[in-house]
Image 1 (tube, helix red, strand yellow):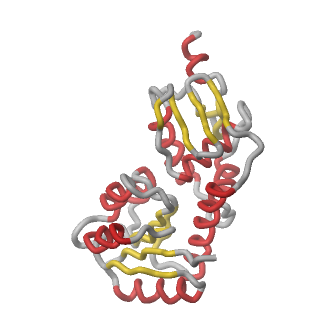
Image 2 (cartoon, helix red, strand yellow):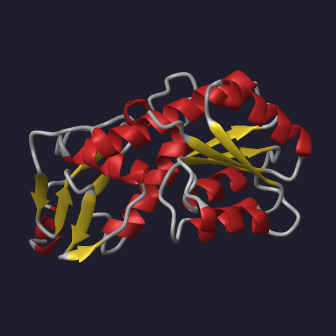
Length: 239
């Protein structure tokens, strides 16, 4: 099997050296960028399987860079940051980050996060399914092509968003606790984050709901979690 390529984007040479050493030891091919401009140049040459991205960089902050990258790139982005600002974490996930780990970090924990994100990314691409489509009023999920349409209009989703939608839609009206969704989509029990799930659900609603503030498909069940309403637009129109 061809080894995975990982881009490490961080302006700290010591962090670059540390992360590169541990990832290389695991058999990954590592490309390094000390700035946003260098990272964007690398992306024109090669598409990595995963990006490790710092928030605080001199020429462009990582959140803005992530927003730019997401216009062309859908593979996992793992933020690694020394920022203790909760807003930074929330923004990093809302702009398309898949996971977040704070500095200083245990390099082995970082490797585990990388492996988990690569694993679910491969599962999205390769897992066969008996059903080819999930059809609901106004919403269609093609499980083979990994595409979603809303009112016959294609809606591009990130892999994590697609996986969350499928988990919910396969079991309509069943309430999922955020921890259950995290376990399914992130394949990681140790680092469960309710805020991470909340941010991705918010992103998903912005893309598939006609009015995200008044969701028709992904419903919040107070103090319990989330459930999928299989009647979607049809239920709303009957009111």
